[in-house]
Every structure is written in structure tokens, then in C-alpha cells.
Length: 120
Image (cartoon, rainbow, N blue to C red; front, side, top):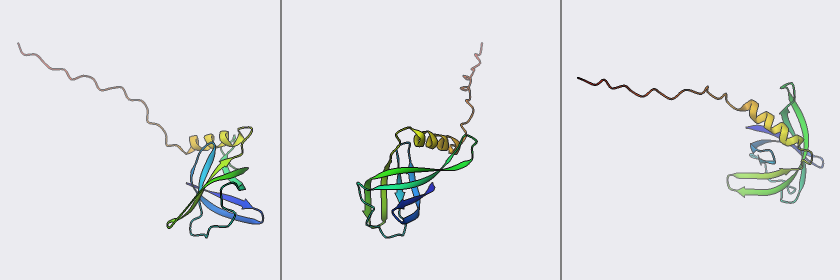
């Protein structure tokens, strides 16, 4: 769906975002080994790319708390909850989702009922 740069101390990783919502995201480490800082309770800095008022991609820095880690044979994913006290991140993600959504088809009227001719 998207990519995000995750920073923790001097470490910086570009990772895939599996899904994102107004309040958080699920991030996939792909083929990377799980760093020791990827665990619930840790805070990371993330750079998301969102649409600004002019429909241009703009980076937004956000701090996020790791709230869940899934570590299984298929790989490692971790869920984060954004620290968004003023709602800026949520508003930006909503704009991104609206811009990425396929256009809705125009409403079609229901079909007319079939007319049966009566024989006399």
C-alpha cells in the first residue's frame, strides 16, 4: 500500500505499510531481521507521506507507540498507534484515503418494471 521511514535512535528503516488508519498503522519488516527495539511499549519516529492542501505529497513526521508485534515464520509485522494530540495526522490520512479511493459510480435509477400486455 505504501512505505514509511521508521527512525529509532540512529537507526532508520524504510518499510512497507500493510494498512493505515487515522489512529495507527501496521508495518511489515519484510525480509529484515527483527531489531531488538521492535517491541510493545517502544516509541518510534515515523515519516509518512500524505497529501497537502494542494494535493501534493508532503512528508509528515509523527511519533508512534508500538502496541503489537506479530513474529511468525512468515515474517515480522508491528502495529503502531500515532501520537496525534491535535488531529493533524488523522486529517492528513483521511485526505490520502479520499484521494486514493476509486471514483464512485454515478447513481443509477432502478430499472423500470416490465409491462405485460394483456390480451383481450
